Image (cartoon, rainbow, N blue to C red; front, top):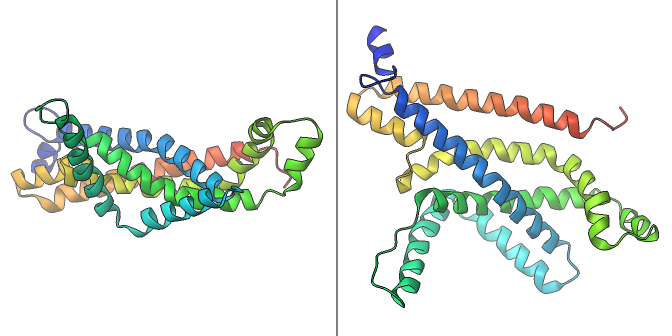
Length: 235
């Protein structure tokens, strides 16, 4: 027991600092991915309900691709494919080697996957809003943007908050996949500690507890947000 506490302590003798740093990267990556994924998901959902056939087709292709590909494969494609593309573009102007930032690549890859699923949540929410809402707002003199911002968006958030909350919980766990592109998040730091100390049960158990605590905190926060969003609803 004492040996385990020493290994998990902070300072030169333990791995507490590294695990904490990995947790910080994990949370930061998830928080950075969330707004990007939500914005992309909303745009794709708007494309799916658009009156333009080409936009609807493009939105369906987007969701089919990123919902169908394994998340790990998406990360590899974005990281290595993005690096090759940037290198080719940079090669037109300079011989300098360009290396893609692991954090940005992970954020982009996870954001693409998140947005594909979020677009389906938004699409279901859009279908739950009566078409008469648009017509009523137009009768009051609202333009399309005012109608969306003042009438549709508040209802959209209320109807989609549950599904988006589930996607957030999934996102916090999927950040562990980014360890394959050498981003020092929680799972990678845990794996390094296991390799050095040869104590897999201890460190992977601690990582499990950290992810569980992160999920519990997120769940409590999501419940509070959902209550606030639905505070004006009749019971």
